[in-house]
Image (cartoon, rainbow, N blue to C red; front, top):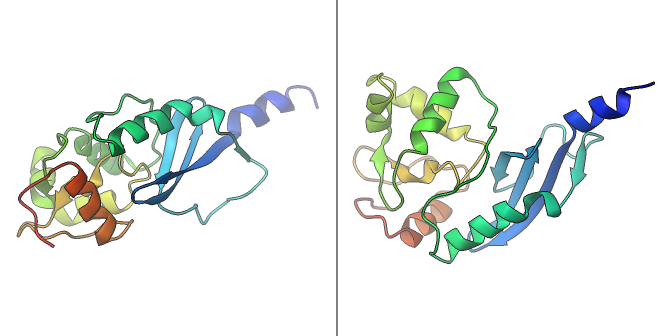
Length: 171
């Protein structure tokens, strides 16, 4: 059917993996934008006919992540396209405003979003963050300074915060 190839290409999602000091990352994207950086492969729809492996598509992502892990990069400059609700997208935008090496609490994140009573909802949104490390949910900690809630596990969260030289948290 004419035009089907164009539709298929538009919906195609590309993926690759990368070994890092915190384990293997699964990286995915579409239309030149990153949609996922995960500590494990997605459970829904992968692999499937709309997925294609491509290391070339993610050369810049891998370069920037490599620089981050070697201590040379403090801010990512990548095109992102996370998929979520409007609240989740707002929470993830706020995460990107937390400076390298700094931590805030879920309550502080909610306050910065203009909804100081939404710390639990913020925690839920952060838990659904599809772009780990680049959208730094690891920089959000409990109000008492403890490490809490991280999809990659507390060990990885601590490693990321230690890498950044973050202070003010405890395990």
